[in-house]
Amino acid sequence: MKVALITADEPGRVPQQYLEEIRQAGISLKCKNCLTAAELIALAADADVLWLFGRSPALNDAVLEQLPNCKAIFRSGSGVDALPWKRATELGIAICNNPDCIAEAVAEHGVAMLLALAKQLQRQQAAISAGLWPGEREFLALHISGRCLGLIGYGRIARLVEKMLSGFNLQVLHHDPMSKNSCSLEKIYAQADFISIHCPLTEHTRGLIGAQQFTQMKKSALLLNTARGAIVEQQALIEALQKQRIAGAALDVFEPSPLPKDSELRKMPNVILSPHVAAFTDRFDENFWSSSVRKLEELQKGDYAAQSLNLNI
Image 1 (cartoon, rainbow, N blue to C red):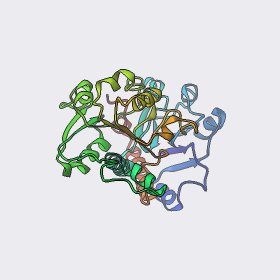
Image 2 (image 1 turned 180 degrees about the vertical axis):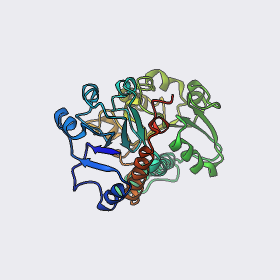
Image 3 (image 1 turned 120 degrees about the vertical axis):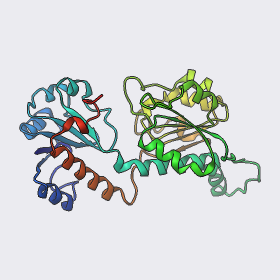
Image 4 (image 1 turned 120 degrees about the horizontal axis):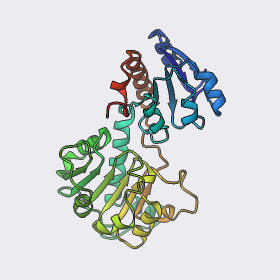
């Protein structure tokens, strides 16, 4: 199998250990950080698989049409919203990812943010850092046990979040069209104390939560987003927080990203922010690369549809 890694030079981001594992598996690998369509086409003219990390500025519909041997696009990690999904499907090209490599880390990060927000740790830290000593009830924490958790999307990360929070004896609701136990979004908005977003960004989920949805939520609700920033209308979120339609938000993702320096979100005491780093832990490299090599080995078996997100729907 011939693989073209289109977002990294060699030697570069791929550790030597994993380059050797790929080649020992009989996979031919070419690498270049392709910034233009011409560079990508030249690199991947005979490739069976396009491999990338993050976004590629050169990959689009027109480029795919000039890669007759391409059978799969493999994006290491989870997000595939920036890929030419529609045209790839029309051409019979499988779109693949390996979200297992970051699922635990993202779930841990989300749970940590949610617990910190519920306990108002960011406000307590800010007050103490400013030389103050808050009173016992000045930043009153939420009692978490027995409340309701609403999960929007019910894939690997959402299920891990549910598992990690299981000790709190929460009522758990989830909405996911692929789940037989899915409830309505309206039920989650009305009943959940904690709303955690885990769905992919698609044409159907872009702007899924806006001004109307915030009016349906509890005023005490906390919103967590570790998925994609564009799923939530950011200005509507800012207004909902300012007008106390919801109590707080914990965000690792933004639209646009990076978050503008003058964004009101940076100044809000009832918001916890992190700069899209939920996946990155001290074990990231090991998990990311070993999982990516395993996915390439699965693709080498030739059953691209079985590994795809788009061809077996």
